[in-house]
Each structure stands twice: as C-alpha cells, then as structure tokens.
Image 1: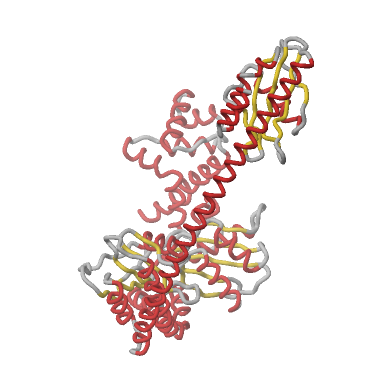
Image 2 (image 1 turned 135 degrees about the vertical axis):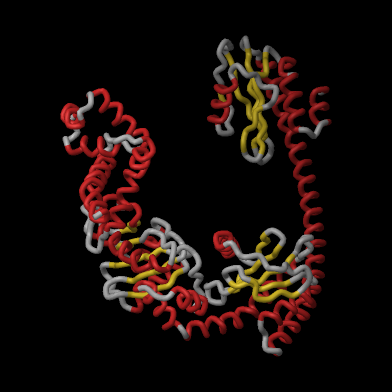
Length: 548
C-alpha cells in the first residue's frame, strides 16, 4: 500500500517505472532486469537497465509486440517481460527475473505491483495529455492573436499598395522611362534607385551618393550576378544592393536596384522594387523591339566577321545590336543530322545558346549554323540543350580556339569547321562537341592549313625542348628525332648519333623531364613523332627558304 501511494504521488513516468523496478524484490524472489516506457509509439529503455544483456533483452521485448512472454537472461533460470497496460494502450514493460520458483502468493503480489504500476502510468499519461491540451489551447490563442495582427498588417499593406499603384500610374501617364521609374522609387523608399543594362553599365540613377565615375563592369562577375539573381524569385540582396531583373519575356533586358547600405528595406520596399521592374519592363521591351527591327544588321555583322571586316565598323555595329565584341570570342559551328540549316533551326540554336548563358552573334550557312560567342562554351551544355530542343542527339558541334582580335575570326571559323569534321568522321562517337584546341595531331590535318598551324603544333609539343637546346647549346630535339627515325632502337640511335648507349638513356630521360611528356604513352609518342618530323622536314625546309 505504501508503494502504491508512492506510485500515484508522482506524475513522472520514468520515476514511476523506477519505483516499480526498485521494489520488485519486495514481492518475492524477484529482480528487475529492465524496464521500458512507450513514448510516441516506440519502446524506450529505462536508464536503470543493465548493459550486459541489454541488446538481447531489447530485441526479445520488441518481438513480443505488446504481449507478455519469456525472456532469456544468461545465468538466470526464469525471466519474463510483463506488459504495463492501461485502458487503451500499452504503457511499457517490466522485465522480471527469478532465481527460484515463486509461490502463488508471491506471483499474486507481483501481478498486483504490475497492475498498480500500470494504473499509475495511466494517470501520469492522462495528466500529460491534459497538459498538452492546455498548451495546444494556448498555442491556438496565440495563433488567433497573430492572425489578428496579420489582418492589421494586410489593411496597412493595402493602403501602401494603393499609394504605390497611384504613383506608378502617374509614371505611366507621364510617358514612363527609366528616369521616371528611378525617381518614383527613390521618392517612395528614400533609397537611391538605379537602372543598369544587362552588361552592368549605368543607364539611370536617382538619389545621393552616385559613384563618379561609375565603375566599369566586370563581365565575369556581371554574368555570375545575373545568373544568381535569375535563379531566385523576387529581389535579391547583392552586397549593399537589392537587385531585381527586368525580363518581360524571359530575356534579361536590364537590372533595377535600390542601394540599401544600412539594410533598412522592408517588405514594402521589396514590393515597390518588384512593381518598378514590372513598370520598367515595357519600356525596355520597346527599346529591344527597336533593336530587333535591325535584326538584319545583326546577321550581317556575323557574316562580315566570318569573312573579315573593318574593326571600327564592327565595334560600332555590335553596340547597335547589343553585343559586346570587346571580349574574347569563340566561333561555334552547329550541325544536326535531322535538321536543315534553315531559319527555324537557327532560332532553335539561338534559344538553346541563350538558355545556357551564351551571348552570341548568329548566322547560318547551307548546312550548319554559326555562333560567334563571347565565352568558351561548356563541353556539354549547348549539346544537351539542343538535344532537348530537337528531340535527338544526332548532332555535332565544333568550337574554335579563342579569338584575341576580330581579325582572327575568319581563321577561327575554319578551325571550328575542322573540329566538326574531325568529330563527324571519327571512328568512335560521331556526335557531341569537339574543341579545336584539343584535337592534337588532327589540328594539322585537312584543307586550308598553313605553316602557322604547323608551327603552333610543333611549339606545343617541342617548344620546351627547342628553348632548352637554344639556351644550353644541346641537341635534345635532334636526339628525339633520331630516336623516332630509328624506330625506338637504342643501339641504332646511339650509333647514328655517335654517342654511348648510356648517354642516349640520359638524354631521353632529360627529354621526359623537360617536356613533361611520356614516351611510353601512345598518344604522346605519336604527337611527338609527328612534331619532330614536321620540325625536321617541313619547318626546316621553310626556314631554309626564308634564309635563301
């Protein structure tokens, strides 16, 4: 009775279980091996459980699935898991061991202890439920208060929106424009407002602290910023600015921003910035439409760049069509087996290029589309985008080496065509993207080659050795050439050079160290052998002709 009173005096389930485990021995020759409580539908072991047989006992108790049953405890002949059951649920288990057979009275006492423990747990769990219900009621009251506050905020928001829309309506009525938008935003938010074109050049600023001169944009950082902002919905904080893109039909036409150095902007400020961008979009779209009227000039510029044109004229025309020709460019040739190079396919290529972030001038030829793009294309991005657009992967893309000047573009166009042809006629995969500067030996094959390309190839593979020979008055290139001419035979090579075999081994090792190429590698060996032959015969003859 004293134990029963103690069990019901506490409302802590763990303490109730602990009292039962401590007093099991008072009922007879018993011991408490382990105890468990049901928490959120799972059995949780008591901290009083022993560690020696914990895993085996845990496994067996969970296998009982709510029923009473025997438990194996090494060294003890009798052990049983007794369920602590309430009216509607299992509250836990009490695992009891016995060193001798208990009497009927002792079993009755143990059963009484188990029933009293289960009843005490039922009372504790019921108290917990009442407490949780009270907390839930408190939460609901807090939620009601919060909803009332939100209602007040909505009323205030509607008033702000009416003021904002009235201001934007005035802007539209006055003819709109970038200056009108930045003036309205500055007047509404108190923050400096600005508009930049997509390249990062300032078009309009209203408010204090305008930089003078305005910083020249970094193309790489600008593109990264546009990409980061474009991936998120709504204005995005970029350092001390809140930035949103103006892109009425998916294409970025410009950037609208507020300078918020002290991070004072609230939801109203963000909404004003979004509405300002929506009001600015038609104006920039109109300007863009004017540029599209001159789309013929856009294509003519690309055609002239591929055949060669005056640089001053090209730069002026590129500004007129919204393309920055001052950056390093690449020529990209696209050919798809199931598509003719007509206008719809050219538009498909243009969409795919824009989708992967390529800024380019586009034109077409009889069987392929040409892009003059301001950055090195990703190895697979354009190809994968076109595969999705066309529904087939049977396409080939050739990419030139970089163009350091506009005068390089016609030659780079030939390189892109050669890269495409090498891919199309390769013995392996015919489809995909091929870069000219990764062709190796194949760069010097095909029509239209000249000594400049041969010299580039030789310099790539033998340049370090040629420079070493020039500085140290050695004959490393001649040794390598003779080694290949003798089929890699050490004795014949040493004899032809009139040197000892060990000297030849030393020179070949020095050639590996200086050039960084492995003579045992099949590709390196092939390219080195071709390069030495070109150096010895073709360029040697050219140098002789120049001297004569």
